Image 1 (cartoon, rainbow, N blue to C red):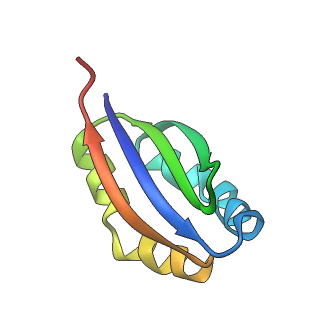
Image 2: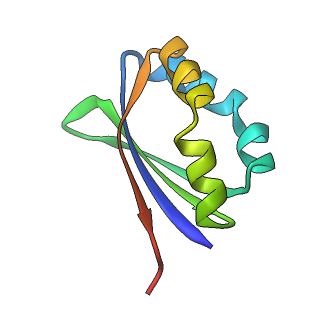
Amino acid sequence: MVYVLAQLKVEDYATWKTFFAERSATRKESGSKEAHLFRNSDDQHEVMILFIWDNKENAREYMESDNLRKYLKNAGAEIVNITYLDEQ
């Protein structure tokens, strides 16, 4: 298992969240086990997602794909940062 912390900027949270929900099955097929959403209480356009993924290779393949970036652009969002974390 690997944890992935993704920081995004979204134009409109409600619109982005609909797109995020639509991708649930795709994420699961790619190895995602869980996703926990957080919003910055001081900046409503900043979203953090803590994913649990089956392995780092699958997480990287999904998170760094051009397909995901295009999908996010259509949702009015962009990835600011991705951090891969190992549990200690």
